[in-house]
Length: 355
Image 1 (tube, one colour):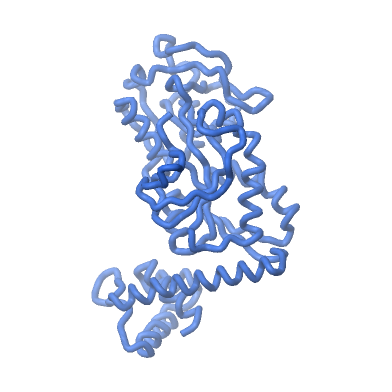
Image 2 (tube, rainbow, N blue to C red):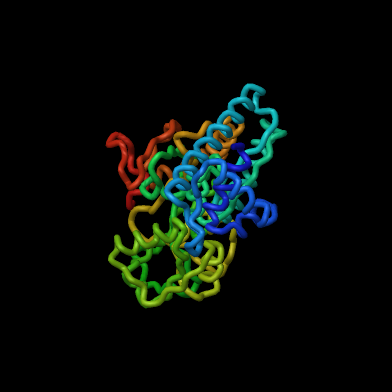
């Protein structure tokens, strides 16, 4: 038994297909089939039930894959520890981050990080939030960056706060009539201090007849918007689903509907064709956190990347923290544990409460 065999069996289990796993591993399908058969012969048990379609693990296979993941995790932890002994001078970091968030955060972070760790490669896995969590739990990435607090996270992970982000309603400049406003507000764009402030507030209940643009399922922003609708007992008459917050903002700017998006989807645009609104008397916010498994050893470079993110976004989100009322000026950065399912230590602050 070697590490390669462990990885091959895990790949077949993850893809439920020898052919698909072979493509992913860049080996031929007959070669992979031979390796699996040889492992089964050596162990004296069948790992896969080939009568099902797609193929599935036997009980012995489930035990094998579970232990194989643990062995490979121990190997990776050892590699990280040994790299730290060499002061993290060389290596690669595997992280997961939603595609649009990567475009917003990483350009601000990569420069300062490379100044500290010039020989560390950053390998990104960009995907939907739920797929990123799956990759994290299957040890394909060391940590991920996700919004939305901890209620949605699985058992056995830790979170470290990076920054607070506000959510806003965006609409075309002529879509919101004056009678739909609770208060007129003032500006709609960011000022020199990079803060969206003094915005008009809409009465969400008066927008029922307007088309709403929301994210497809599988993204945490969709979960958040669904929670907002439930909180306000609000159901739009017409819904358009898209895959991107940036697309939602652009469609709203074109007058095709209204949308609720995080601040990062608004900041890149200085578009005179859209307006930004609050949709309640108290701002809606969520945390953006680094998330990693309790069993994973984060190396010096990985810790350095998280700390760089915290430093870069600390000042930028200070006003958002004040507006949301969720953080003191100096937010503690120690890791928080979660056992998933929304169950938390009673002394820990709930991070995604409706605000």
